[in-house]
Amino acid sequence: MNSHDLLPHEPFKRLFFALPCSAVQGKAISRWRSALKLRNGRPVPTANFHLTLMFLGDVGVSQLPAILDAAARLRPLPAPSAIILDQLEVWRRSQALVLVPEQPQAALLRWVYELQQAMLPLGFAVDPREFQPHLTLMRDYRGPVPEAPLDTEFRIAAREFVLYESYKGKYEPLAQWPLVEPAPAPLERPRPMLHPFQVP
Ligand code: 2AM
Image 1 (cartoon, rainbow, N blue to C red):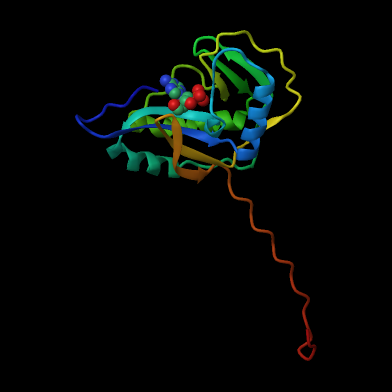
Image 2: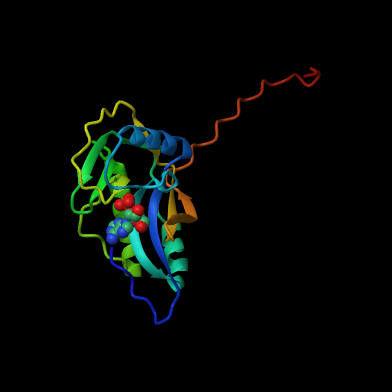
């Protein structure tokens, strides 16, 4: 995604869509990362763990209503699911140590494609690099893939997606929408018919 054309002097926000990482999972991932005793790179703050769906870049604030509107009109996934991060990789080009799913879910990949398509008319070009779900653990990482047993499963719940503003190293949620259709409410058990003179 490239930085969007800004009007002269227009205030802007640095925006991206992502799946949030729950506090519990964040702590677990952070503890596991500490145990790796990594000697280089900058650890991503635990509070910033997320799984980027689409990076929008610097966006003029006048664009925000159209982005919110397009995101709200996306069709949710039919079934609840989670992204299982079970593999550690070093991405040399971006100098990042990342957790990735060994088997990215086709449904999520399709949904991200729809998100990209929804943003196209607003002027956000699709990143020529293939979308690869990942959670960044370390930036400026230059070492080899740490030899670490990934004996725990880390899960990112794919329940809702969030539009974040990146501001001074913090990620501020601006809006969120359900990513999966809400489960239907359980049917009320039919009450037994009472005889008109029976007292319940
Ligand atoms: P990542 O760590 O999941 O790769 C906010 O800046 C987030 O957007 C970053 O954490 C990064 O997500 C992603 N990001 C930043 N710059 C980007 C770029 N040029 N292209 C794609 N994603 C980017």
